Amino acid sequence: MSLGLAVARVEQPYRVAGRRGPDRAPALDDAWRVVVEALKTTLGTNLPIVAGGRSSGARVACRTAADTGAAGVLCLAFPLQPRARAGAAPRPSRQPELDSVTVPVLVVQGERDPFGMPDEVPGRIVVRVPDDHSLRRAAGAVGVAVTDWLPQLLD
Image (cartoon, rainbow, N blue to C red):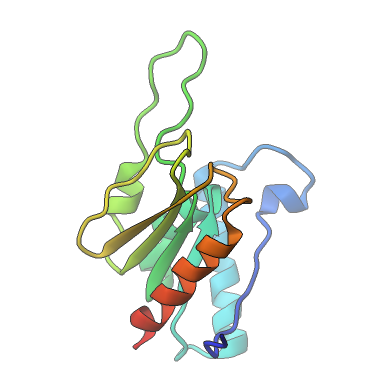
């Protein structure tokens, strides 16, 4: 099914640099804003942008949605609850990052994701797929969820 959309796949800066661990959130967010501005310059500013990403990239999309003028946010495997470090107190939930988004959000989450399951609330659809955080075994279900949601978002 063709939706008549352009997709830009963006590699996170730390991956491009060959590092395994992500940069701090402000650096990731700044890099994303630069990418979105470049896309707007190339494709035109009148096209709606659906920001999205998987895991850390989903968090970036949420945190920058307002700044980039996103029409919607697509979160694949949003890491809601960080893993606890041995001997340390539990780390705070990342729920506020999702809750801060004021445009429609689709979260596609593995039902066995060790990072938790976000709540569905008005403006946020959560689709559970039979997988874990990787979403590798549920690629077809992920595709269906996204292609069902995008036309509704862009109407």
